[in-house]
Length: 180
Length: 210
Image (cartoon, rainbow over all chains, first blue to last red; front, top):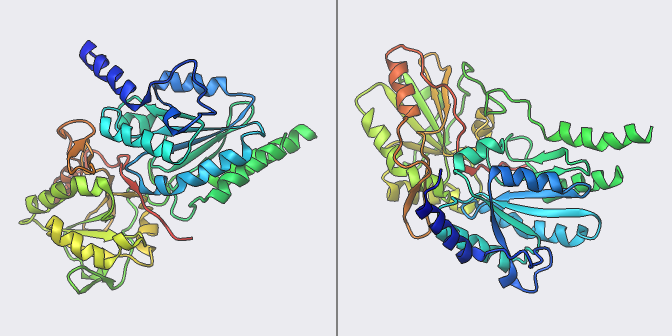
């Protein structure tokens, strides 16, 4: 349970990293400064996922401390640009320390720099609990949901012999599109 | 028929990307499995190290990566762990797997000197050791007993620490209160069962070459 003081800090933090107006269009920002990085709880995340069908959803889980995540993120933006008009929704879920204001500010700056004009969230929960609740061993991780909201693919580096590339992400999206 | 065909891509993708787990959090190795062998891995001290060179009652292998903020954030605690067991029959070996320039041997030598590493630090350039251990995080610990069976794998302790770009050390859960590796070493030295055998390692992802 957060105290009122913690909540006040988090509110200010939200303003600092880019509060998300309900009037704003997070999918088509006019400029990098319009990039929205919105806090989400476990419950809020579940609600977001439940609301996405019938869109195919590609969720990129990343953090500023994850160099591999940063290196591959521009490819995700390119995929978004290629598939955004085909009923495929791209979403990023940041897994920086939710109490690390500098990291969240850096995350938003990074998203703006690379034109991540899709929905961007950060998990407003304890980081270790978040990994457990999301059933993650590590990041980068890309989870793809089909039009029924079922998890269709989970691309991770959890097995040394089954590393994934952007081609795998695109192949998974194409496979779902071909299944339409 | 169309419905059945429509599920095929879903099934194929799931099968391709769902590792059959060996341990609770490790796709390759499980508690009780033997320590993988390794031969003549180059170390930061200029020598080479093989599994057959290790003769202590307890062997700790830990995957490391110089560039990783979680490794940097817990370097001091790793050094402290080695100091704690310096008079005991324990050997700690760090190994690096990544091929990025800032994780390779020349950078490892600089990092080991800077961080005051008081243990052997080897470069697993073939990535064979890392693969055999299913090591996918840095840092990730593997503790083996005298029979060279795995008795613990995962976190150092229950509050992983990261070094920020400004040099600050930030822990996820404040001061650690459960010291999994130290407890595993102590229990194994005493011939007792390890209290917690596996935890979900937290850190950077090891990059395996395909």
